[in-house]
Image 1: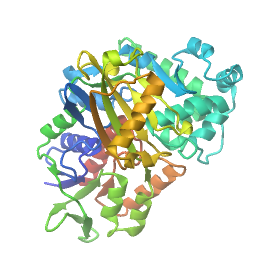
Image 2 (image 1 turned 90 degrees about the horizontal axis):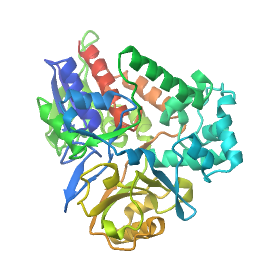
Image 3 (image 1 turned 180 degrees about the vertical axis):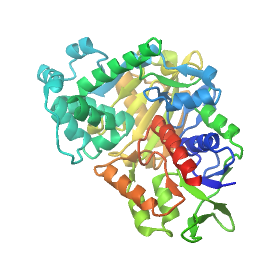
Image 4 (image 1 turned 135 degrees about the vertical axis):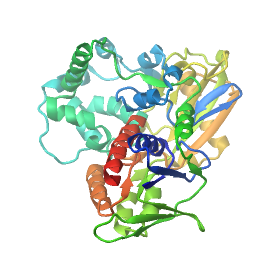
Length: 466
């Protein structure tokens, strides 16, 4: 019976363990986790009738892997969609007021977020020639070249802030938004690429006898995202071992004709034998684990940067919020350097997030340009968030509920050269048969990326163990 040790019980490690068990039922799989609970950044807390997420608020259906995982786990009847208002009403906080993000061509033509010159530059994107250079390019440079300066500074910055909380001038378009880069190369234009993808999706749906569905909807569970983590933990033959710190790996070569054996060393006398080891913990932890095995590999993995984010959940009496909280929320682009990156209107996005007479808001603070905010004490951080809410939403009353979750290393940043770094890392890892790396540090930070990579890793492991 082959033995596999997975280091990290976030969504990447748990989904991998589940998919590997499906592909190789006889495999002995052990998941190790440093924290006292599984799930990584994914967890739901409940206090005083408020239900809030520590990390991701949900997941999109623009890739099928997470939705399929939920169905395979028997959780389909517990899934809920975000409200229509959450998909329709999204805002930017600019020049001291909330400004609606255009949700269609008509709204785009009417918006005052950019000038008519900027609008024409955006619409002319489909006629611009694609870039033929294979050199990496920042998101900011890509957006300026394709849709113009104004659209880059408003829309591209907001997109990056909302997903990565990073700097569009540092992040790689090919690594962070590979689909956009691919649209330019394959269709000659981003706008043409989206149109082609939508047409292809409709054609495929009709061929299957289905009604074409609009993608990009957000999903979660009525009880919160922890449902997925708890169900994954429940179905594993061996539950994750929690509260253990993996310190190093030892490879035992057994000659050219046999695969090496591995020993995973924890603290003290803790150790686990394995035929294969998969590191799905954050990159900085992976670097520490492999440092004694391969210092050069550790240096490259450790070079993947992370930002810092604080999640501030606040509950208010509905009567204390002077504006209609009917939508997803708002973003303050990174270039504005405000204390709050954005605010999600959680009780508008999903039901049962707050008592009937209250609303739940979730402010994000820190990010690449304001990491110091995460280190502020609770009183100072809460005061900063309340001041921002007063300016943006007119809320003067004190909250009736408050919780702060700090992520000192929150989201990996795919800076320029990231794909080349990942290719080097994967090539180097291949020199150590039986060692694999995964998680959101390499091929996408979203939940869909993690579950997709878990499926691919499970196939690779199955082939290796066979």
